[in-house]
Length: 81
Image (cartoon, rainbow, N blue to C red; front, side, top):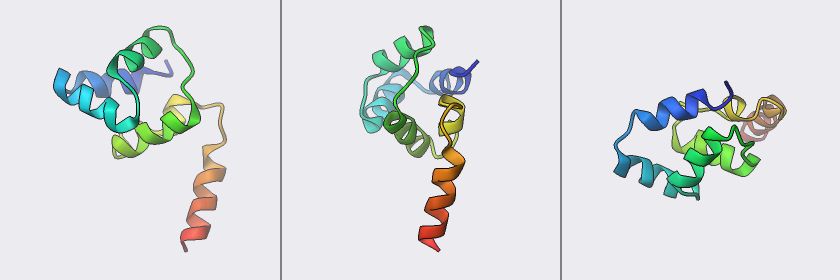
């Protein structure tokens, strides 16, 4: 399931850590839990924030496999080089 990695990641934290993680991502834990339970599609910006704040434990590709993240990652790599 698309949201399994996010669910597992969140469940590995205390409630306070979950709240802080969600805040750093620019959302709430309530929104993330609702999105997980409803299999809701997250916005690209939130996916990027989750990827960054989880240090890659939950990647954009895990959350939105319909987006060509490889292109963006390759573009980023070329610009950074």
